Image (tube, rainbow, N blue to C red; front, top):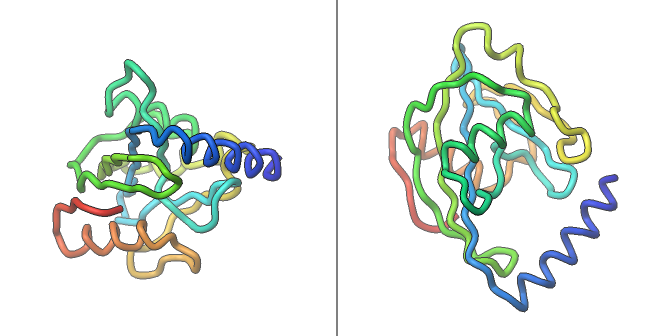
Length: 157
């Protein structure tokens, strides 16, 4: 299935090259009661990243956030702490705007973290902010550094 996702991704990027669409996305910096961050490895992309994805037409950012957390890591209950920042990406030929939310799970909520969609998610895990796994995506690493510095970010993804 990972091969199928990669092939679909290549076709999508070819379409985006031609159409240059404007897209909206959400990602979640999910923190547990111990201050660890939840990261995922997608089957269609390299590296560890925050869970998240695209905002569908007619869907608000918080609704998309809840849907993506449910679909990717089986998290149903969380509290939005703040918006970490709004970022812009022109990768993959899209004009993409990504809102990063910092969300907290209640004590014991870390047990809920699971691969909700094995076709899309290769691996999930909790990591201390000062002991991230090898292969964290550059953008995810920058967002974690901003969070640790107490900054509200923005600009280039």
